[in-house]
Image (cartoon, rainbow, N blue to C red; front, top):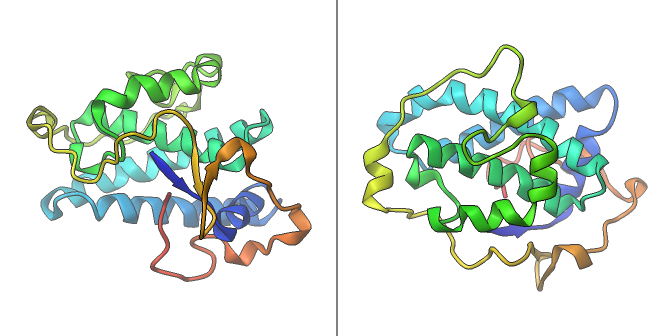
Length: 201
């Protein structure tokens, strides 16, 4: 998948890892991701998926922080969570919400296999050890959509590396230079600046 990179993502990283505002930022980012991905679903399916997505994205915020703590750059930590989401969408047959085609799921898993294996994450179990003890609320599957092979929001061909869009150029994630924390304003984080046009990638 193609991962964008700009000041909003650096701000989200700082917000999630800052005491006091971290919990607030977490909730706002969960709301934002749920809204964006529900927007890709058929209107008749949105209500039945909302609670599941809220719970799922809340759990992936823990994955994101764990990946950062493990030394992954921000773009890669974020891509890990998006891969988790695509595993979940695939398992539910939510083809229209997937960002990558089904035949690239294995490639994306292999790119982060060491992290996924360490935390028990698989295509069949997208959350692994990050699954809350109380579980997450479930939603109906739509396997027919998966069988139809319609992945209208998926972008193929990005399984080889993390692609980072800094506004002008596309560079490999591992070569991206992250700003120091004191250079980032947390108020610019998605969900914290009231920008309703923010995107989740």
